[in-house]
Structure formats: C-alpha cells, structure tokens
Length: 502
Image (cartoon, rainbow, N blue to C red; front, side):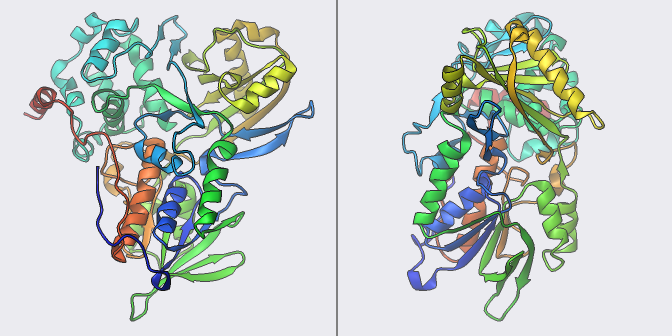
C-alpha cells in the first residue's frame, strides 16, 4: 500500500488542464484519477475506440451476425489490485468479470498441469504444486541446485533487477537445474506472458512473476475474464464515467507532437494533433513502445539527450497472432474455457469463448456451433502469416480432435507487434514515470516501476502513478496503491533467500 498526501481535489477556479495521450489501461487509469481530482482532462486515442491492446471492433460474419473482434483472451488475475480498482469505478462488485475454474496447461508429450487444487497460501502454494504436478515432482525438486534457486524465496523489488537483469530467463532455469520436463510451466505461465522468447527475456521478470503469483501473494494463478467483449464490459462504461466527470475523450485522434512551454510561472506543454495545437498544464504519455518512440522523436524539445536515448532503446516484442474461428459445431463439453499449450508447433493457448463470453455464447446457441480462439506469441521473424495461421488450426485439431470435422463459418486474424520486450540488461535504461520535464509523465506496461507489478497491472499502476506525480506537483493527493509485498512474505523464506547472496 502506497498512500499519497495532499488536498482532496482542485477548486473549480484552479483546476489544471491535462492531456493524456493513449486510451489503453494506463491512459484510462491516469485520466480517471486526474478527472476525479477535478483536473480538466483531454484524452487522445489514435484508434476509434478505447482500450488500447484490449480494444475491440465490430465486424459482420458471413452468416450476417454482428460480433466484436478483439486482441483476444486476457487473464484478470486476482493480484491485479489496482486494475480491479479502476474497473470498480463502474462495476463495484466486479460483476462483469467471471471466474474460470482452472488454469490448465497441456504439453504435447501428454502431461497436463492444473492449478485448481493448488493451495493459495505461501509456501503451501509452491509445495502443493509440486505435490500435485505430473511434470514437476519431489524428485525434480531434490535435483535442483538449491542454493541457485534460493532467490526465488525472497524476490525484492527493485533489487531483483540489480541481481538478475543480466541473465536470461532460460539461463536462470538452466542455472537452478529446473527439470526439463517442466520447462513448459515456467515458459508458458510466465515467460510467454510477455510475448517473448525466454532466451531473450530478462530473468528478473521471470523471478518477479514467480513472486507475484506463488510466494508473494495468496491469490494463486486463478483468474477472471470479462463476461462480454472488452468494449461492452469494460471500456464503454469507463468512458461514460469519464465524460460524467467532465473529461473530453477524443478517439481517432493521434498525438503528433508534445513540446514543453517554459514560462516564468512554470509553463506547460503544447500538444499537436492533426486538428491543431492545444496548450495544457501537464501531460501523461501512455503509449506503447513504438508509439512512444515515434512521439518523442517528433518532439525535439522534450526531455534530455540521455532520456531520449533511453526512450529510443525501448524494444517491442516479436509479432503475435490471434486467430478467432466461428465453427459450425460445438467442441466437447468438457473442454475448458482456457487451455495453455506447449509443444504444438507455435500454438500457445486455446480459448473456447462461448464458455464464458456472453456474445460468443449467444452466437453458439443460435448456430449450434462454437467460438474458438488461438494464440501464437513471439512468432519468428520472416514467418509467412498464412502458413502460421494454418499451423495453428492444425494444432487445434491435434489438441481437440473433434474440431477436425467442424466447418469454419468465418474467421478473423489479428497480427500485432506492439507489446514491450524486456531483454537481458535493459532495466537500467528503462524510463520511469517521471521525466526531465516535471509536467510530463509516462505510463504503460513498458515503463519502469519499482513495485511488484507486471503486465496489465503494471499498466494500471503506472497510470495512477503518472497522474499522482502530476497531482503532487500541484499539491493534490493521488491514490493509494496496493501491491503484493515488495519482498518475501515469510521471515523464514526471506532468511533462506538471503543465503544466496552470501
């Protein structure tokens, strides 16, 4: 918990004007806190709808049905305290989220792991997993290099980056003699969540994820999913909430340039779009790595040379594919809503959307079919899109053989490459929320945050931090933030973890 101090909100006659560039989770979190404190917020989003990488668009299928296509399945873990706090603004009971009963993982060799019956309280969460897992047993645990594995017991932020950012996730698992049969657990659950090849991903991010989901929290690896497509369940209600607070939401309006305006009274920023230039007292840049690099490159007065170099060094993860198939017959009723997969020729997971999403369930009920989604992360450079799409469907047939007989009524394929990559040795150069220009802050899952957060929760947390940093400069309090502990939860485990540094 991180409380911030200051007056409750701005008086109407001294409310600053703030621009937020980016309408994804980070930008929406920043805009929400600023608007709640009385700031006059203008949010710019280059796409026609809110949500960023969780946006959606309407499309018509060949059978005439109007449906929503999005970037696909995302798990809303119970440790996403700040993201869930954002969603509670319009859904206090989180009734628009639904729990899935398990996080099953299947390897092509025949092993299937489950987290449904694993205890959630540390250290029983890790011990229970070992006791129940067919791919990681007590003999495997005994065969690991105990001393090399001790840091897993006491992950501290930001110290974990100082110690382990210099090696890859693969190198760390090799170092601790992680059992080869269980590699898919570490890679599919953690490394692949970053859309990255584990040979490139910083080991510090892998250890942080282990801390968040195993030994640092009591929520485990079970998660919720939205009951309807992202726009209807999450972003349209939040957009309406922001408008009621007086925010101006300008979708379809990319920010082209941001220039500091320095005056005797402190100045502000000039924000240029295709419609002209507007002056603001502050700005939050909540953009994906590529968009942020482009905006900073087009804004020569922003920041310092060193800071600009750090922005330019931000890397984007390899492309990923989301294929959604509308089938003319159902899959077997015992198939889970979500299944992580490994060893299936690039297929990383399968979702049966009609198991949990209302729109998909209604289509399936009308047609007698199913809506199935396939994901492939870190697609190799130069791979032919159509061949990758075909391989995913062939892998689906291997995992769920009954789909071989299904006719594809329609399909949509989303190819994207806009997620951050956290390669070995990159943390020291990663830009933080504050910038050399006091009235400009950064937010997003690519931004350094010295708190134990990751993925969507990092986006929400940095959004609130970016807004809070601006508010603090104006004497207004920000928002209390919650995270899992910044070090191991149990004294005994922390003591054992400390032995690794001796």
